[in-house]
Image 1 (tube, rainbow, N blue to C red):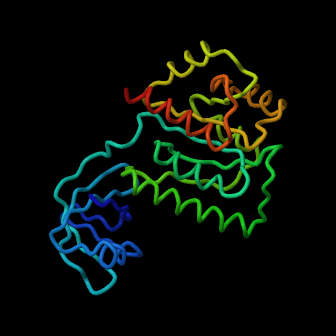
Image 2: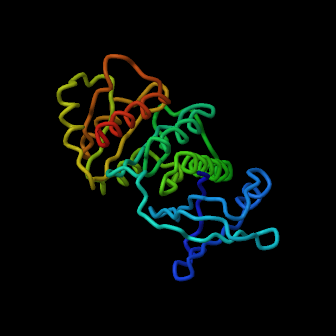
Amino acid sequence: MNHFFVKPENIFPDRETILIDGSDVNHIKNVLRMKPGESLLLSDGEGKDFHCEIDHFDQEDTIFCRILDTETSRSELSVKFYLFQGLPKSDKLEHIIQKSVELGVYEIIPVRTARSIVKYDAKKQKAKQERWQKIAEGAAKQSKRGIVPEVKAVADFEDALSYAKALDLVLIPYENFKDMKATKETIAAIKPGMSVGIFVGPEGGFEQEEVESAEAKGAVPISLGSRILRTETAPLMLLSVLMFALES
């Protein structure tokens, strides 16, 4: 079933009606060539799903859908994972955003670290953030998420640590931390309802001073095994492990 997000103000439960507008109208009409009576899954971006069918098209810019059933999204994890991703080179962050959204991440915060090579001026950063958000939305549609995870503006490392202080647990995978037993215990302690931050370094990882600063502010070091993973592999590996642990 095709899946789209709609603005909450376009949902009218009392009239059993939802309006679709914007770029999705052209995609539904001219790309998918859908007709009245066909089914759609619509989400409000806040965790609620609506099973609908197309009622009629209004001119060229609006689609009226009839609500058949409403439910809380079943695709969201019971834990909110915040990915603090050290800025990688080239377009690696786009891949990380796409796949981490598919794996259930709640929010993504790109982080400027000591070993980050990429630099953005204010104008370029704004354009990048808009593109990253569109990638997150596309991945959320594809994976039938109930929300569109937000991609925040690039943050400095210390600012990211301050932002993470409000979370229940903060993890920092670090290649010099070898204790797999402690790592298993840390992961096993994650329970539904928690908010968990994950810090991942860019190419070259974190500086020792950054890890020490994170630990001083409550971050828990963990191991991802005996192999050194690329920056684009590490968050996806860890999110996969966490998702499996929560849903199995």
